[in-house]
Image (cartoon, rainbow, N blue to C red; front, side, top):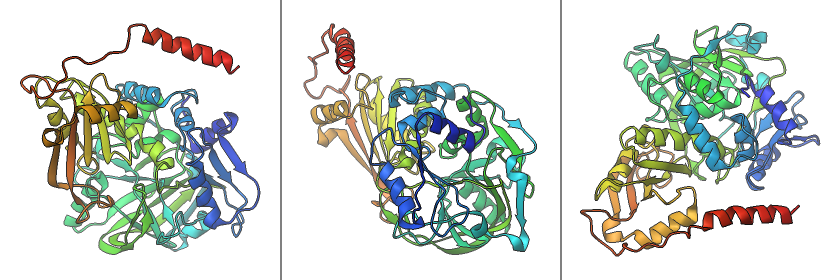
Length: 476
């Protein structure tokens, strides 16, 4: 099932027992963020959370943890809620191959119902804002899809970027935005500033569940997120034209904010509790001037708690990081079997591959570090053999403990790029990266004693199914 807006998805979550309505009055701080934080600690079937009785707000509708479990992630893709994560990743990869699917342009977008313009723009009158972590420097919009265009090729649909970037509210009509240098919006902003121009943007809040997934996906510069959303949905993504910028935005958004990133203007942004499980400090970041807000009547404010993993952020960006890396690597190395980049948005990746020759695994790892995502995120790659499941951590630990000779199989590469948010980077944005080759050496690499590996008994597969059936019968 393809969802055209957030509300339709929330209805399905409720029918599936995956949305919990909190009816008693709560405080905006710390209760909202604490509840979303707690949802990440109660297991893989955690529900989305709905709050509409928040002290100090007369008319709030707040959705949290919408993607915050594998059950919810499965439902977002139209899969049964009990679909195992490995199968979700495999289905994600299968749908990737349908890309591109052209979007469907629609009129009468529901967010056109209400408008604020010019001096009337006031974020505080539209959104029930609250801090997510105690040390945050202010209120954040952290689950928005931000639309920007290449200033030198604005008519190229594929170069129109839809990305998720953190946005701090610094005034009723002002935001500070963090455009990570490896991301497309940073390229757009640099081009605009070199021309001495502001960069128009549209910021969309409360989007359909697949749009939230693709906005955080590492894709090629000229690949359209809307065309990828269509592939993942199995139906064209509905889009509409934003009235001020003329940009393509999701048809079903709750709120559409339009304005510009003001050229060469910077203001302190942060600190903010990030996906790394650490606060990032305050830095001078570009400033957004808001010129127009369009929103649905009684808009739902969707926000995302992130901090020490696992949180909703990790479920949201897990498969959509694994699959692009898998597809990009396979394009050059068809021997690659699977990629597990679930950990801290792919700061660590586990790759299983066959080998053509000695040293091949290290070449695969170096290529992973130079993919669009790897340039800014991957700091450690563990490479394992094709018969090791990278999603099965005991198998990965076995490969590392039995096949790694640190003198030959660990490679450290100094002074490579990484997102400034990576807490181990020194200075921010620069780090050493590590390859751990936990594969079995092949010719001409003749190191070690790996000639007689044990294998599962031929009957073990049938017995595994038999044991699962017997356990299911015993448990009723």
